[in-house]
Image (cartoon, rainbow, N blue to C red):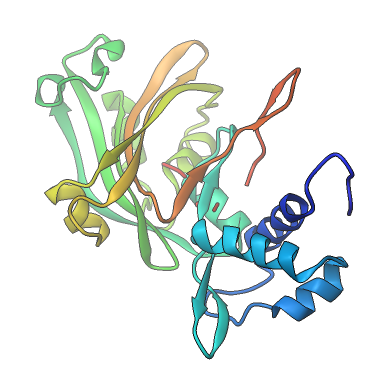
Length: 251
């Protein structure tokens, strides 16, 4: 494992993060002791403590005095691949589901500053839902589609199946690329209530436009709990790489 070009604690942290993401340990499970990690990685106690401290700061682990270190949570992670929340959560070995809030035809004028003008029409179809991972709310989604597509989507089970999955497998729509912006915000009363978090809690917002054959098929606004979601980009000197991973995203 050792790479002389990278600090040891960095290498250990990266490996532990991958093991956590793979589901090697479950939430609430006791994490290996420092001595066990020292033996497994062949490093000093200082290196192990630094690595574990980093995982605690990132929210993966939780120290309980007198009891040990425990797995705190799992994340949903989207890393440059146009897949839905359901696919990402399943890849992590967890159970995805949705709670439908609103499924209806709406006027574009009802939703300002969301870029819905890209549809070049006055009405669109809204699918608003809460996405859950093992029954824990992760993301509030407001997903807008052309009316004829949205109506067909609404005929399917959108509680147990992802919208992208239905669009591609049942309607034959090949979602080819997306343009998206990601930014930080604080939870307002609506987001806090629907996601079960405190008002003012940190959130990530993803605003996305999805295309098929050069035409816009979906505009979505996704409010993610910052404690359950990450977006990771891998960089080097020559290229930018996206690695698919759920610290779980969808439709």
